[in-house]
Amino acid sequence: MLVVLTLGLLRGSAAGEVDALRKMAAEKRQAIIRFQFQDKDKQGGIDGPYGFFVSGDGTALCDLTAFAEKQKPTAIETFNGRKLAFPVILGIFPDSLIALVKFKYQPKVWIDVARTVPAMGTKVAVLDYGSDVPAAIGPLLSRESLVTSEYRQNRFCTYLSIGSAIRLRGTSTSGAAGGVPVIDGAGAAVGLFVGATHSDRQVIPICLPLDELPPWIEKTLKAGTTLPFPLPDAAVPFDPVGSNPEYVDMADAFYRNDLLAARRHLKNLKAAHPQSSCLRNMEFEMAGRTGETDRLLDLAAALKPAPGAPQAECFDYYCKLGLARCMTGDVDGAFAAAEEVIRISPENCSAGRELLGMLFATKGRNEEAAKWFLAASAISPEKIPILQRLEKILGNLKKWEEQEKVTNQIFRLEQLYSR
Image (cartoon, rainbow, N blue to C red; front, side):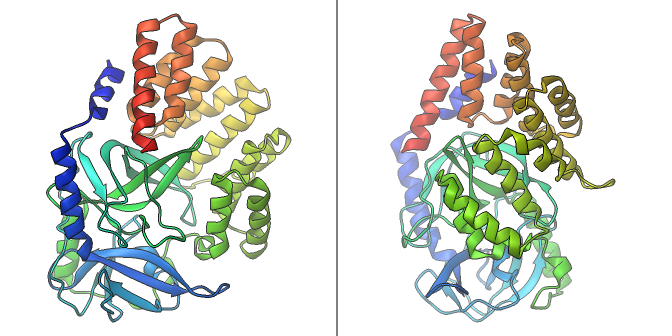
């Protein structure tokens, strides 16, 4: 039944809805703000991150990375090239990547922040600073907790996933980048675009939901306090490796499956950032991708959190320990790790459920495997690899009708993400 309901989210709507959303996106694009920084190692500048005006008095929400460095950006511009002076920093949204700032500028166009997240299946648009055409238009498909390694310590963050292929900003002059708004058909900002997750070469656009921000914005504006620049280290939760341009090069090489280049970048980054938890996570992922099973257990052990560590640190450790044990043939040990994952997992997190499905499938216990893959797909209906595993298990169980429904769902998702 859950699969049937999910399929309903993927059915197309009238072309008029998409046309209206495109028109709204072209108008609201005028509210976007671009930050530029000088590249320390290469000629030219680094384009982005971004932000957007949320009122006509110059108040804006911006990607926190715009203020995470000790130096100010070399340029701040509106969509039409109007230069802006460095803003006053009013606050940083707790446990998030968003800063509230105020410019000495009165924009003609701004974007209201939605107080609720639209129902799953609602079409949204990812705006593009460099083009009137949105970088992506598609339905919201899930609201899920994921562990992010961008911080000094792993954290759970809630993300909205979007069912669409995405035009990411790279060397071209257009495409989505961190900090651009995601709007609904009414033109309200429902999310702040942060990037994409990659799963077996499926690229899924994700954004931070903004529904909790309006009361915080009102409270912060009423308080009238400001933050200094440069920001105190305690106010910037990022792993410092994220500001190194070579980190982007490493991630890009990894997701292109150019593992030789990715390893070269990783080696250089580890020398510069030996304490980076983000790099320890990437080294584990890289070893798994290349089948270096002899290293996986040692790499997982290096991630073991200290007593009293945040729950997300423990969750990530047991996930990786379970995978490492499974890949080295210790399935019983992997089950013990997976049980810990489920114990500390947020309700809206699919990783532990998917892991248990994989382990039961390894044991040939297809009924239990189907149960856990179905539970994972109910949380993450957009993730094709989970559905492919469920499809295979249902075939093993000779549940042809259920398998056909999953096959159809995979087909619809492949259409969404390949446009």
